[in-house]
Image (cartoon, rainbow, N blue to C red; front, side):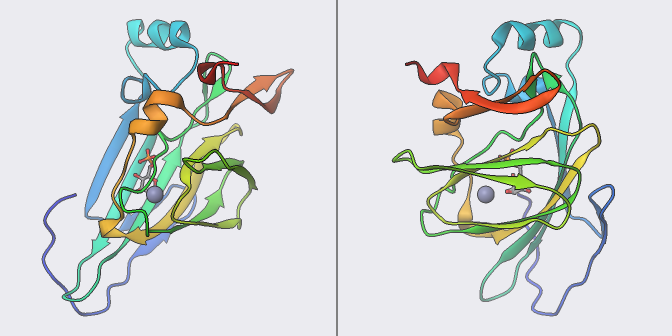
Length: 195
Ligand code: M6P
Ligand code: ZN
């Protein structure tokens, strides 16, 4: 994240829940299929998309609230509808680099799932629709999947120091992948985990 000046005064931003855009915003990132190339299980489908010129999967917006005492951040993510092979568009997913840091995710638009998994293998999933709020305990990796036909928008609240650890998710993924079968989202065992 950028270096943000300390501000001990209250800050208010205005969110458009249909787009995830809030104003003012400090930082924005785009994530494309190329950024998630290791995350989707169907590597042939990934290559076919990349040969055709890549594709936007989601946007992230951040506002780190830096005070002289402690630093919360606001994030919004909009995951555009689509699939790579039969696997729905999703975030990369991450553990927090700091093992004592939880996070709150709040779905404001769209439908999908939040997958959560500990390093020891406890797997949990929450079905999401607008208004669903999930507390993600510190030890759980977290990934959001958009299984709908419209953008999925969620709000995140976390401590700036939490950090992102993507390595275990790149290496193994989550226990299940969410794929389309007969027009419906279903969870199937992740082929990358082996049997
Ligand atoms: C939320 C927060 C961010 C995170 C983003 C996308 O906005 O959890 O910290 O970066 O979602 O998730 P990921 O980094 O896993 O792609
Ligand atoms: Zn997080």
